[in-house]
Length: 151
Image 1: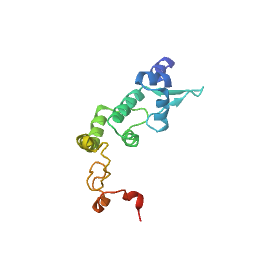
Image 2: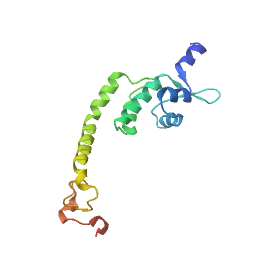
Image 3: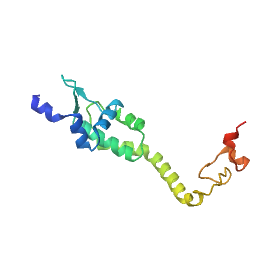
Image 4: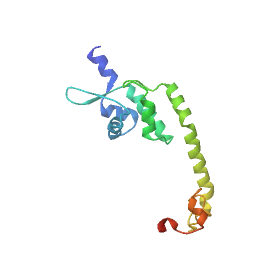
């Protein structure tokens, strides 16, 4: 493979950041986390294979869905260093994450529905406020600041 062909396959930190719509510091952070990979030039500059563009898109889409980086890293670990996540990987990952996403949606909907009655009420009721203390063992003892009085 000639120099020109190799150059077309690789991007600098700035080029990858610009094309992916993220800051260069985010590119370096993703690399530090083992989510993307680079090689070093003889001048010690980072060069990223074009496949990292799709990885960054996968990371950003996953983060937008609220998926933690550790979970994203677990999914990406199934790929080789220079592989792009194929559509099938996104479909498989989304199936793995759907229950977690649905649980978070249910929690947010519950908060939305209850927040009007809880904001600013000052009740601090461990027995009544299901938003603050759902299923809390201390709620059996009634309202009050018991967490500060343990023992």
